[in-house]
Image 1 (spheres, rainbow, N blue to C red):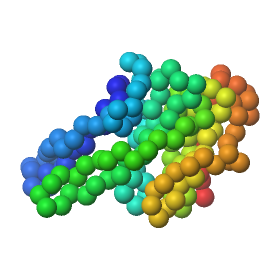
Image 2 (image 1 turned 60 degrees about the vertical axis):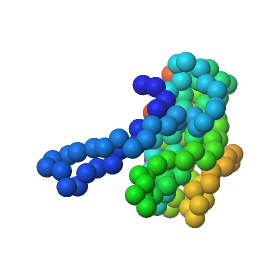
Image 3 (image 1 turned 180 degrees about the vertical axis):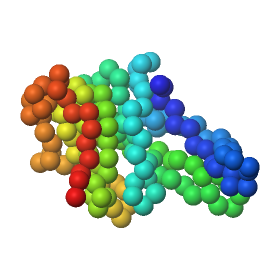
Length: 157
């Protein structure tokens, strides 16, 4: 698996699908320490297309994290790129799946291990910033323990 995020551009003039590699970045951001087994778990694009959220797992830490990257658009002949912004804890270990609520106001995270099965980060739809939403979280016990940990999380309207 690894913890690399690869950014590609699609060549619309090509006959068929042609991808051009633009960038490779660590899912942990620059200079952040992590264990050799650490890997990215899920990648989610914010509803406005300006932010990318990546879950990092298998870090060996007490809790894993979600990293936020800002999408820097292609301009002046430069390729689109991802710029690391920050990371927030996800309340548990091995985040399996994430989704952004339809209104863009929350990032829902399903953890497979650790004390919290469902962790929610508030998300500012205007700028993509994220921060903990402790009143929305559910402990692993609410799911029947780690043997019944949530595998999927998404708000349904």
